[in-house]
Image (cartoon, rainbow, N blue to C red; front, top):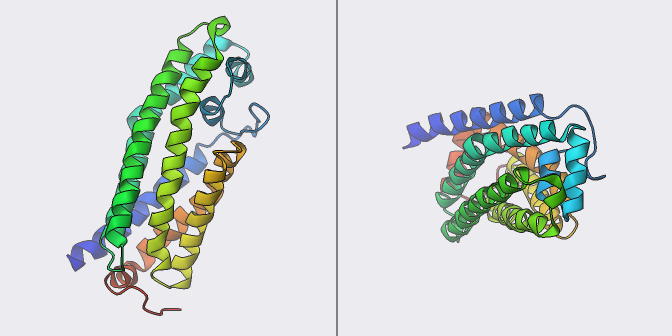
Length: 241
């Protein structure tokens, strides 16, 4: 088990780093702002508050509305087939790591985190189903009710995922290496920022930066100090500053 952990944990770290690098390379480099608040058009669509905002967003993405709808459909297919399964798998592995920690309540916290992740992914698929309906609806028929049908599961998704990061961050705080604590702090800040985004939607996107930092720090730790991390799992609260 120790040998497999020494191999699998660094491999998991390398996978996270590769995914982060890919996300950075393929991010939207136009620096455009959608609905006056968002840099990611798909997030703007998820959190649109009215049919008029959806119509505005389609025009902002592309003056040719048909081209805008086609662009969103491609993104929708990618999310359903690639993005959602990947983040669900990555967070499930993080839940499993938390479950294997020896500190008090680690296992219940891991179960809570996994439940939130699974429910969040289910809400994500429901949200994408309603987005597909909107993309197949004529612009003049887009309504506030359709926007609500997208935004409601989206808010549940984000709330559940951000909440799941709270117990997941505990495994970094319970192993008091300064770098692990920094990763945990990044996840904690991202989680709290994202939860505030349920009230002020712009903060959902702002939560990405600390969460991305937490992912990079944790991935580097998994790669360069996997043995230390595994030892800390078995013996939490061992001073290692």
